[in-house]
Image 1 (cartoon, rainbow, N blue to C red):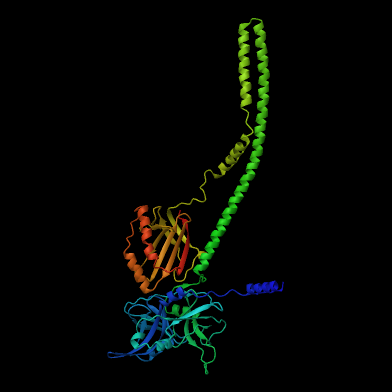
Image 2: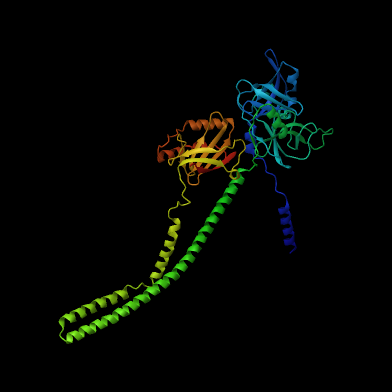
Length: 518
């Protein structure tokens, strides 16, 4: 008894604990790291170059990079210095120019030169919760030192370093608005992003606590999104921002399973209710049919008795006329008796049987259901082709870096999208895999003509993975629209070669509900 009481108390305490904050998805942090760069300050003297400092930064557009003002402060004091931006992937870096400098809140904006193109990060426009899981991404110098990297290594693409911690809300620096957190950063991390669990920027890492004896716990400060958003707006830079909650793909899958189970339960309940209603209607109809049948049987019996009496009367008259040798009257009376006898038999035989009660009841129920359904379209059979406008369903979507806009589509029954893109047909329905040349992301789009659902799953890939996918795409020839069901299935099978290269889960899933356009 005591053990049960203790167990019950433990369960109650566990249930009373607050829910744990969402943990960072490594795939999202890795995807965001594609846009985190090393910012280097180089002094050139003839053919010799010397790196006099470096920090971190991140792309907010393909050509603009945010970093700390103190990272590029030396450029303001010496015209012989130049700034460089080194991405984590590729063959080299880009020269950059400082286009905005704000020492008040330790922010600076660089613009890369020479037509370079970076992968921009998405900003989180919402409020960061206390205890939220965050990741710091950048290029700490102590890691470079431990690896023994040379100058040429530091100006060559290197993977950014990722650390994890939590937000400690309620404290900020006095100079400008900051976020206090515990994701470790070191010298060189300055200007790198602080990311939420979905890989969106929530702050710009700037500085940390200093301990005289080295025994105190370390805390770090990131410039808040409030400061960054105002800084970018003042300098005319429009970065992508999102304020949607951070929902994992696993949560979406679980919600979809629960929704499907709920739909099945609702359909089963509706079917049971219809069955019960039909049973009640059938019982009422059977009572009515029973009354009708018994009434008709009684009426038939009464008619048969009357006809039988008339038959006997006509037969008796024929007998009397025969005794009087009145042949003509005998024939008439006899013929009438015969007709009346046949009528008697018919009246008796045509009475409804008791077995017909059930069939009559079924007919009554069917007749009562027919007017309600005639002249209307069945709700489960929407149009499978035509023009649609598709609107994002936020409850069933995970959006981190994409813009949210309505999607107009035109769909034909043979799987042609917008009159130009043939979709492949496979076990999961109609789909098209898009591998662009100018973006490091692969999109798998689905359209379900039965439910009018349009789904876009985006995989944010690294450079090597994208090159493999592009090579696989080159081997596939997409059929023209209207090529036929066999070609659509062949195309659907061929696309599996690209899908086999994708991670198990997408970084984004955008599910749209589509309505026919009048």
